[in-house]
Length: 62
Image (tube, rainbow, N blue to C red; front, top):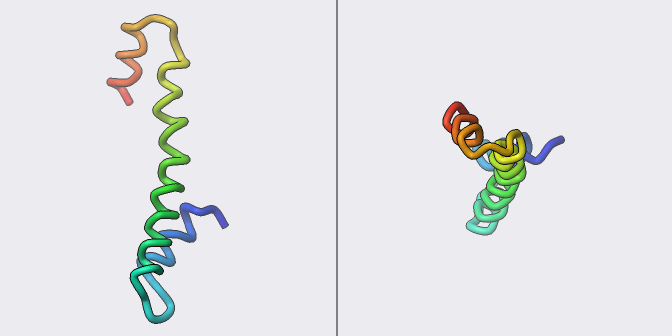
């Protein structure tokens, strides 16, 4: 299963006792998965056009 499905499930509905390490580990995996989705999404706007004003319009629309 993808990381962005498993991490929130384990974080918000644990099946047993929860420790600080459990919370830290699943929170870090959730953050890592979210980062892996967002970095390419935000970088994509700069690659769509060579014109500065067009890039600004793309980013503003997003």
